[in-house]
Length: 272
Length: 367
Image 1 (cartoon, chains in turn cyan, purple):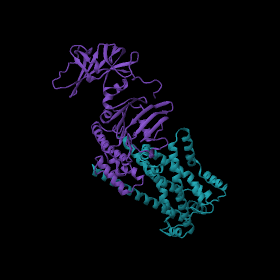
Image 2: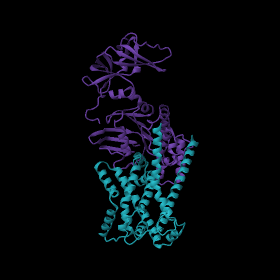
Image 3: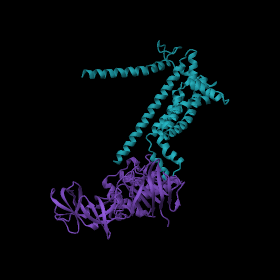
Image 4: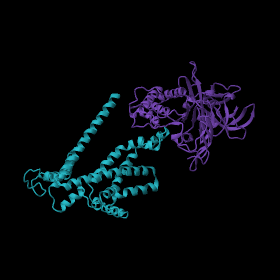
């Protein structure tokens, strides 16, 4: 009995500790964004201010960096989805050593350090006289983000009944129609997850972008350069905004998901 | 009119394994034709070859007189109903049914109308907008049939479509399938390992074993005049006796067994010196108190009596421990022999067949 109580206590302590370590930096950072102090800190508290948000709003380089970040992220998603999906379909149709080799090639960029990907992207495209810039950042990031998409799609393909493809072919569908009407709809959840993960992987990417960006800034690179010259609390303001966007999006998604689930269950219950 | 489907000298090899071995068969238009055999006999391979998913290693497949070499599954006038039905889970019922029309570019209103019409044909109502997961097994079955009929195939290929259903529903769907086939007059080629299904539904049955056709004939002939020992023992219950054919006169042969010398009709291609067995169906045997003159008689002990209602199944043991089966019809006054009693197992020579013994597996051709 007492050992049960003890384990329950330990579980609670672990959980609280976990949440504390996870979340306290966020609170400190968020708090610092509202503190009227030239240095990003919550202590000593010098009074509430929205000054850092105003500064952020008035920083033109920040706006450009934000736009660049989004441009690269959308580019990466647009490239990584087809490449990752095609790779997954290919690997799924292979077996034995060929499968292992192709799989290894696809997954390798995940395990490769970002700096290596960044430098090799730069050197590779230089041989074709293509200068550095955001386009290279997108290509460099795609090389490892496509692998994440591939892993997600490959997992989803495991639950696909190949008999459905045969059934569609037998009914007269072309291979293109099978892909569009049968296989892709089955993969949509994985493609959605792949797009979201790819997007955030791109937004937060620093090291690949640093080597390939040429003269352009993205948010991570720009913030990185600001930290080098003493960190103004505008960075905290930016971080707080990003956190709020993420939390809001998550809550909206979860509410919508639960509503859809409830509708489906209600429809099923009507039939019974 | 040319044959609906013709297989001419068709063989299929998977590596060293010969799945289909020199099959020659012609299916007529509008026919309900079954391939019957145990699992692994090559019948599914034949079906996949007709639909175009496998290519024959040798020989030619013709549909409506046309050579099918080089024609892919999506260009063949066939529709296959898969064993697991392979309905599209993400489409509602009506889109499943009209999928074959959708890929042919038929517009949505026409497709919807055709789906409704086919749902009526297969006797399914008010399910057009349901999801597949909301249907029962029998309903899914009907949707699969409707989906295949939608493309107006010349030939419907059915791969054991009833095997997933429970017994009651299976028997109901048998009659239903047969009725749909008569209504649409489409050629049905049906694959099954269930002899009851094959006999009850088909115009003709092809019995297969180890990749080879054993017999192609109407159901009655398959049952009453099996071509060889495999067909006799695979289709229906049968008592078999090992022995040796000694003399033949007037179509009746003398067959020496461990239980005595019996007389029986001699089957096709059987002559003295060929490995053969004597076969007699349980319903053609009589359990008598005394030996009957002119009949074949074996003294037995009654081991078990199972009263089934319309008939009675009796298991009897010979002196050398062999188990024999007698089936008696219950006419309302039939007396049941008590277990343990000593009786004669008797059958008339005209009711028994001596057939080539082909029940042994061919060596070296089994996975």
